[in-house]
Length: 191
Image (cartoon, rainbow, N blue to C red):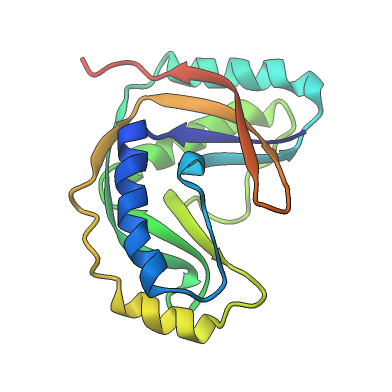
């Protein structure tokens, strides 16, 4: 099964993000594959195809982290893209507050998973919230131009906290990925 570990967002923040991204959808109509509201999350670790026998160890690693980690305050900054705005493939909402804490959480989680055979990515971790991906038919130069004009779209009023880490099963389908939470654990409340 195809798995990843994510920091989940509250339903309220998903609603607010969905409202904000609707503005982007009306401005950028270039065959983008938009992430569905229910699928908004911040990936901590993509595990890929995973044998079911490893799931108990993954759950244990998540629980170990959440038993020793406080909730993470989070705020959003604005629209950005990978690899960069001039050549967008993945469009995301960048984070303002919470980057350092999410990086530390991700590093600790990755260390916990080494014993199960999950290697660290060669790419440095950059926490973000993916909202769209360019398709083969997307005119990336047009998308880039429109994105540059929308980088000042205000996401600063969106503040939340990460209070839950989830193990998510991802099934690919022609209509987009279908996510199913198969385990979650709550981070410690603020003291």
